[in-house]
Length: 295
Ligand code: NAD
Image (cartoon, rainbow, N blue to C red):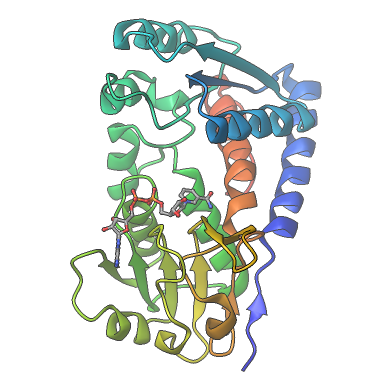
């Protein structure tokens, strides 16, 4: 078997097109322009690239983008004051504080200071609570992007055996919750899991979110399974150049899987597209206008 490649880039580009149409509709009919504020603390080069891309995509969708750059010695109190200012700004419908934050700042305290209805990253405890209890909160972007691709590929996920490898608050745990909400039978595997190969081998859906290059081996994959690789790892090749690989051995896994996301070009492009979708959702809810987009 050779797996179908799930083209996250194409999927994300379609989603962005839908978002741009929706934004144009909101502008014309409700004079509503969704606005996303991104707060970046410090000068971490990777975070700067993410923020630049978010800004570009937000503007391309016809939305307002507000960037707030703060020095890496900013105090926790001043950062929270900035978040509160954005909470009270009616032009801002979504707030994202780029992680990681410098060590002297308590990330949880900053996340909890974001108004839950503007928490487009979906990391606030109110939003994780709503997701766990079937409420209507904001859902973390990366796991939501994965679910969208899975549903597009498989249709109804009900009754399927799914494993999520990784239990972070940002990806693994919300991913498992979303799969449970789709009525999958969900296993969460992590660094202490015994016999990971066996757990993966009985799963119809494998989501890898670990951060260890090619940890999940091709011969672990059940024939015909759908594999979503969230991992982004930069490794050095024999010629000294570097390349990006996922948490799954793509070449071997694609000989057994029914469908698989590549790295790069799979989950990665979906994350920003879903961030824009979440901002539109947040703007509609705050303005009390019709619910947007099917996501
Ligand atoms: P994290 O470091 O917070 O969590 C990693 C998890 O993997 C932990 O729960 C740990 O228990 C588990 N783990 C570690 N070693 C393991 C092992 N040997 N066997 C089984 N489980 C093991 O990482 P994260 O923030 O969840 O990110 C995971 C990966 O996803 C990273 O490569 C990150 O860059 C990537 N990521 C990608 C996107 C995207 O948009 N594509 C978004 C977020 C994260």
